[in-house]
Length: 451
Image (cartoon, rainbow, N blue to C red; front, side, top):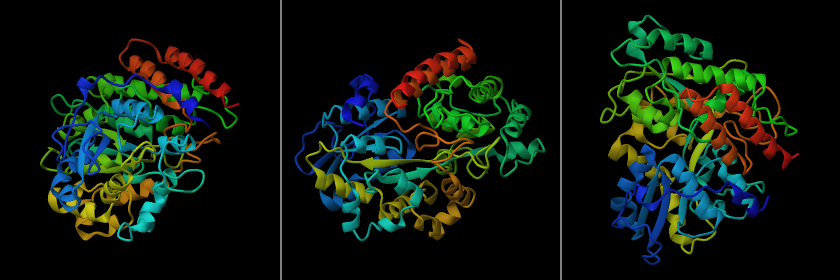
């Protein structure tokens, strides 16, 4: 796999005026200047990232003298920006947040620095403490580590315990999707303005595409067979997508076609929906009384299933260093600190233990303060991560690894285009059949390149 194969999936980056910038000791600059004691970090706009942007100046910069210029973007915009910067080797950023999809693909293209050796030299980092699924997802075919996990996640069902109690509903620990749909119908409208469930409807292979693909997997579908036959308009894929779209249209959140992770987090934390199926990493924000009206009132169940025993995804937002950086030493110091036990302790003591960027270290789940703060969701998060099987997430063999994605460069473009059509179906602008028939044609073009 060569770099030229990635160029066709590049998307024009969002105009600079739309950038949401949070800075640490750098006055808002995202330029590459500032000398050896200044690095540029591009990261996704999740609560954990916003936390590190607040904490860096008074801790990491104070201790090392290294200024960190943070650029924070919404998920879809982040993916476009980081892909463009790294694939074209523009060299604007010294560190970028990437995930389990990008690392193996970009490593093969020779775009990323190897990071395992940096971790090995730092005894305090304790590389052996990292959870095995996270290490495997961030390693190249050569077995070397090419990104350091900031936090790891699977997916699960979050629900308002008070609403369930009022309706006399007992949530199964391992519900089926049909049970979830039935419960959504019962709790829809149980309080003024409350909807039954929140499910992502925002287009994007990593937005709507992530939860939808886990539903497809457990319904018995797949994007491609092991020998690269496209399956986007197959019966099982259609059944799963119709189920998802119908559930959102009947009992989902207002403005669903524009709702991604952030919008669903806000809806759940403000008591506007009774259930939410999404990333396990959301629990820390839901349990923070400073920002959540439902803190202490949320229950957690394993990802709903149909034909499989489990269906949670596997993901990590991780720090990667482009080969183009001229500040590898400073960048590596930041990444090692940001993924360290020391940083987890800092978050716990300064911001609250529920907000620790967890899901990456075994030791996190042995910290007494964290165990207490994460009592409602810690064990189920760890179990969900360990149960996720990126090599066999469905009922049939797959051509690549990945639970909620297909690990080839073309999937970024394919997944986004197909989810645009499915989002339009949620909005009532097209049918699921048309969306998937159009998607099948796109998938067949991708398949031809790998058969």
